[in-house]
Length: 97
Image (cartoon, rainbow, N blue to C red; front, side):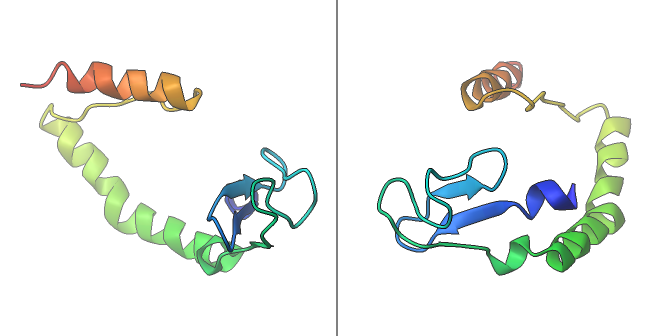
């Protein structure tokens, strides 16, 4: 997970997001759209990601069981393309009162 998350790069000019393996720019280090410089955000550094995962495990993860126990947790498959993920979110939201 750390390797996947730490592969993100962002354009300094237009903020477009890339990934070194999954969505690489045509020219390494340069934005396809504006030719701006790509950078590695501080919060995408491996040590920062590990800290975010620690905080999630400690503070956020317990909420899943809490809301599941109340019968109000809604799970959404977000492993597809953006359009498919949005349809999954809309399908769940349409079932709520």
